Length: 154
Image 1: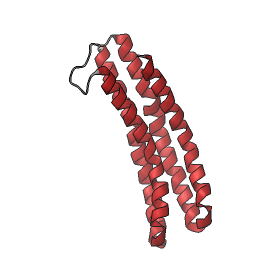
Image 2 (image 1 turned 90 degrees about the vertical axis):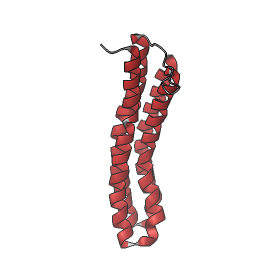
Image 3 (image 1 turned 60 degrees about the vertical axis):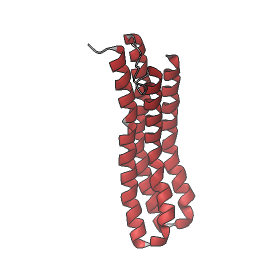
Image 4 (image 1 turned 90 degrees about the horizontal axis):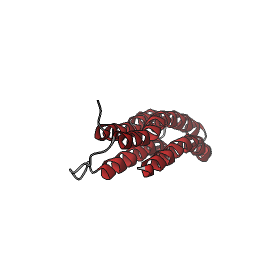
């Protein structure tokens, strides 16, 4: 049977999984960016902006994982004995950003890849492509807020 401490660490690990989605999203956008730069090397800086956008979900996930590990004492080496109920709350705090961050990181990478195609053909429309890409971010931010609100409960 899992202890409260184990549940809390699983919550931190799930939160950190948002980074996997970000990694995949950045990779998807990077492939599209490389195609654009192959045709026009002068667009490197502009493509880099769109490639970086899917990386934010990973940041949100690491922040929640770090907050869980700090609050439980894991990082200081003096982890407090958590009840099962406390552990479940930490687990619940990691799930929103872990799941939504993972999925929205991939979705944002796909949106960024499409925005890069738009920019390749119509460089003057880059702002519209960024808006399409950032719209996906909304859901990661909402999940981040939910995770923080749950984390504050303990």
